[in-house]
Length: 220
Image 1: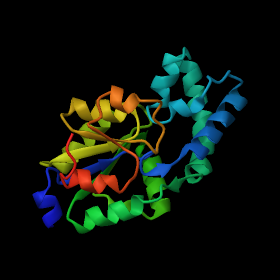
Image 2: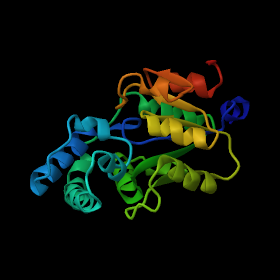
Image 3: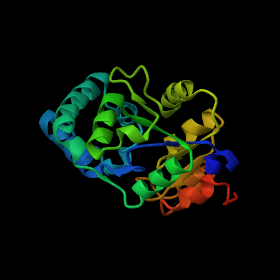
Image 4: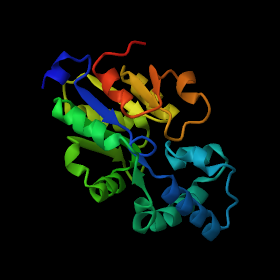
């Protein structure tokens, strides 16, 4: 327990897509399926939509609520059965989780992915028991933003000294709304220097760097 007790943090909250696992193959294949089946013209560079809620991103692209609902229905049909498992844990992540757990840190997940889907994926990896709390969005979008998901996770954790780890701007901004530092990771789906621009306190290239930051050995 000495690691967590002597660290500035005692809890590490991970995003899922682009942070714990490379989910792009399944997401992109399922999006392509959804646009093909509905006949709606897909926006360019679909990979940029991975991370924030699709409903929000597609609304900004000009899709109507009815079109978005149709797209998401067809997307989820394929993703639930196939796409969720076209997915691999990033090299080095398992070792980081093992080290943090051995040192007494509390581990949680906060993802904009619907919570039942996130739990299904983590169970597929055999990771469910690694996390004290697994929080995600709701299918009805009453809990959708990263800030709302973090509120849900933090309420369940209670008193804690957390740090957020994520790969997109909404992870950084959602953490900031709760006064939480965020470690931005470059191995996910960030576009250009978005992690620096949106205020990530640290931006890293390798999972192993998480350990030094959580220990308080890397300054701003």
